[in-house]
Amino acid sequence: MADGKILELEQRIQQLKRLVELSVTLNSTLDLETLLQLVTSTGVELLACQSTSILLYDEKQPRLYFAAATCSDPKKLAQVPVPIEGSLAGTIFRTNRSIILNNAEQDSRHYTGVSEHLHFHVKTLVGVPMLIRDRVMGVLEAVNKREGIFDERDETILSVIASHAAIAIENARLLASTRQALEKVRESDQLKGNFLSLASHELRTPLGIIIGYASFLREDARGELSEHAQHVLDAALQMRSLVEDMTNLTMLETQGKMTFKPRIVPIQTILKTAREEVSQIVLAHEQKLRLACGEVPMNVQVDPEKTVSVFVNLLNNAIRFSPQGSEIILGATQQDDRIMAWVQDHGVGIAPDKLKRIFDGFYQAESPNTRHHGGLGIGLAIAKGLIEAQGGKIWAESNGEGRGAIFKVLLPRT
Image (cartoon, rainbow, N blue to C red; front, side, top):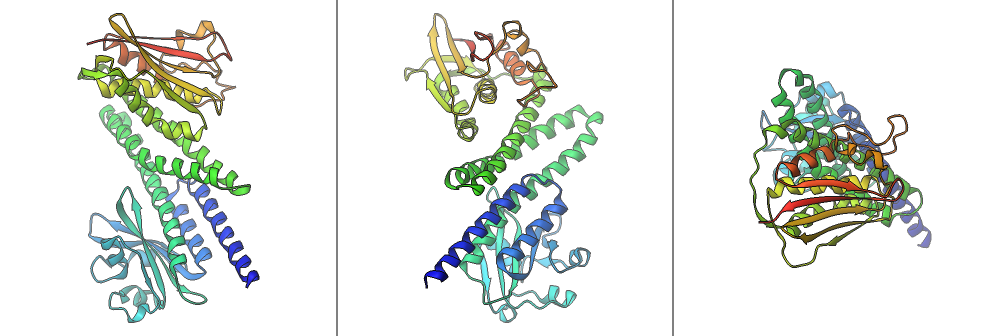
């Protein structure tokens, strides 16, 4: 009995390790065909079944289609449409609920079109929905358990694989869309701006999920599993940095055409919103972000959305150039007829001769050949433009390299 429990525990640990490895690989692979093959082969391995398949929803025609499957020719599968009504996969897709069938051929919902076309008989089946932001994008199925029958543990494992697969496929699709759009960028600046804004917005949600899940795994796991989780986290943070650069690039190109909508708002509201925006990145870097602005409302008259963007850029800059475990302070105080807000870090600091130049577009304080930190160098330029356009002032202070920095923002009161 004890030996059986030990064997079962070892099997679960091995499955968890394999799922983490899958997550690492999926987040470092953006080729859709490679992703699909990896997901299906991992499903066969972990569920010990004959075949797994991915069915994605075709928005142009209300049906599901086979995007990938093991033990089958992808071209032949693509010729077999799977109806939303009258099929097991369609039922899973419509109801957003998993199904376990260990007598599939006797179930009235079993769609025989695939079996007849490929001469493949389905005896047992487990299927789960593939979700992205509460939207079902497809179905992941496993068929014909080699030994025994499918159970709830198989369903759980398949659901985890489906979650990773959905995010990875969505990212791969977005990347493919990005590449197609960038080819047309020279023809239309407006197209480029719209696309970058859309892509960066769409990527934030799945990246937030990845960062949060990887942070949890890193803290909960031990040894090699913790290292795998760290790889996932590093890849997600790098992609998040690229998303920030995409957003900033769009803002930089449209800055001269921006319309500001100023209104009276407490500076505390702006700072708390900015803090929430970067909270997951702070957690991933194991840093501390302290708010120092008191509870008495200090009203400013600014465009809230654009001013939040300023402090998000300043905070991202502080996070990027501060060591792990350090503290970052986000504060504000009343100063005569203005409100002074600041972001203070204890990071790499800034040389005196570079304090003014860091607000120049695309300027990098580090040498291109010895850079240790990412970014295009446009976040501070955007922050400066947004603050000055609202009648404010922004500057940086530092006691030199290795001694941290503080970025101060002076905003008009109401």
